[in-house]
Amino acid sequence: MRPFKYTTAKDVTSAVQQLAGNPQAKFLAGGTNLLDLMKEDVERPDELVDISRLSLTQIRPIASGANQGGISLGGLGKNTDAANHPLVRQNYPLLSQAILAGASGQIRNMATNGGNLLQRTRCPYFYEVAMPCNKREPGRIDGPSGCGALEGINRMHAIFGWSEKCVAVYPSDMAVALAALDAVVKVQNAAGQERSIPFTDFHRLPGDTPEKDTNLNHGELITAIELPQNKFADRSYYLKVRDRASYAFALVSVAAALEMDGNRIVQSRIALGGVAHKPWRALKAEKMLVGKEATEANFKLAAAAEMADAKPLEHNKFKVELGNRSIVRALLVAMDGHKS
Amino acid sequence: MKDENETPQLTEDEKKLFEDLMPEDLDEILDTGVNRRHFLKLLTLAGGGMLAAQSAAAEQVFSRSLPPSSGSLAPATIENGVNVSFKVNGMVRKLMVDSRMTLLDTLRERLELTGSKKGCDQGQCGACTVIVDGRRVLSCLTLAASCEGRSVKTIEGLAQGNAGSSDAPSLDRLHPMQAAFLKHDGFQCGFCTSGQICSAVALLEEAKNGDASYVTENIRQKPGPVQLSIEEIRERMSGNLCRCGAYPNIVAAIQEVHSGKPVEQTWQLVG
Image 1 (spheres, rainbow over the protein chains, first blue to last red):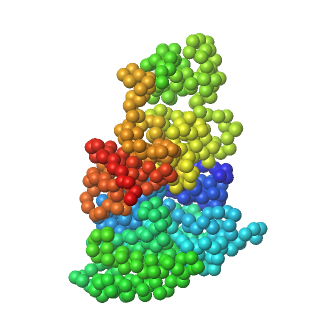
Image 2 (image 1 turned 135 degrees about the vertical axis):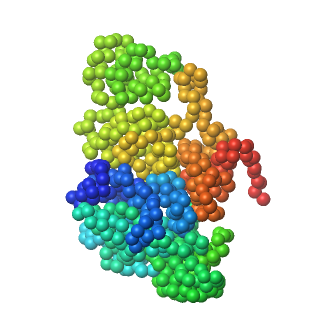
Image 3 (image 1 turned 120 degrees about the vertical axis):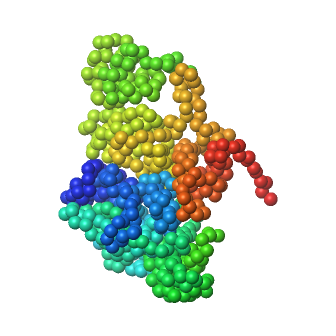
């Protein structure tokens, strides 16, 4: 690991100012991804500002404003605490399930809510500094450049929204549920200004700038994640399909939620993980389900409509059919309330 | 193992010397007890040696010439040094670490606690699992510098009745989880075992608190103590890999401690 200066932040204001003063500095929260990347020489900050002791850990109901009746998760709260909070389990069970589908007990005890959103891809070409990668080293001229995965082993990679520059997928499970639940990310910058970023605008598709994972600016700190009130709690499910039963990244995951009036679907939310550079909202499928009966046949039609747009790579063609079946199964479980 | 240096308490002279050398640690040591062998080792490390315990003059010399804490190196030798103080198995440890130093390397290389293992050093295997402020975490992905004021428990701190205490001289009383791992043969090579046991000990607390897992049947149910099925244990222990494949025995050991009832071990011949 390269040498870096370690400092601790007293409060949010000093934290964002410390970072703004040094373009090479990074915030350190749970550290579960950042330290790993620093050991691999992928991330090379010369200063870490430890924000893990700031008081942005509360989970509380939102009393006023656009998301009144919803819930606010502190940016530095631990994943374990978010997943197990009674309000989250009762009103946003989809989020609890998604968090608990990710990583391991140890890592969820360390990882923060804000940090979870800022995880970087686990693409092996991004992690291995001897390989070409436009995300890790954009515009590098003295060595390998380009995307190693595009023509390489791309079994784990994207089937939606990729570009010639990057075919990596975004790894978080929590974020897939947050995308489905129309969360809002609250951030603060060095000037003390706050802004709200709708979740679907938070992460980016790779385009020509795969080095930018999100629309967060340097020095901006995630202070909270807000979830609006909804009527999905009775019928939702997070399905994660992976190479082993637990503690592995998704091949495909589905966050599915339905609001029902009798047997008619009032509205639906479907987001996919493991298929794109950001959590992929299945808007076509969602739209198709509105007003329809919640039957397996309708779920299949909706899934097929969404997956028809997929553009698989050489080694991940299986993800198209897997996505199809996973959407149907997640919706069935959401309706039924049982997992099997 | 019996050590002739081990007597129940420090002598008055030793206490006095300790107070001069490490005033901030004295209360801790008097409360939790430290054996004489360990005490003498600390003195030796600090450059004091045997003389210190005997001569008041030597005591003064040593206390003047020594750095303020046992673990610190000269700051000039460490780039980006960070002074940090945290408890390890009940004992306050103060040292200066390179900012890059992980908690795992600090435990193993600076504090001589080699029970926590370095498997992958990337957060993928769980061999380095320790318990910080009551929660299991990965020490390989934790900076020592970030542990200021924290309380760390390692595999070395799980057993009760430490060697040197008067009622259980030199004979440790294993933590029930350690005993269950022995009984159920929850390991083969043993490299992942300290991480498995620390993880399992913390897991029991999580179950008691009603924490959910991905396989919890009804996530919306009001949280209460969780009854750990085999499926639940497997899911909740998935962050600890065992290359020898002792999983069925590990699960049996955890089930036994969790339920308080003996768990039968069953074998099946490959048909």
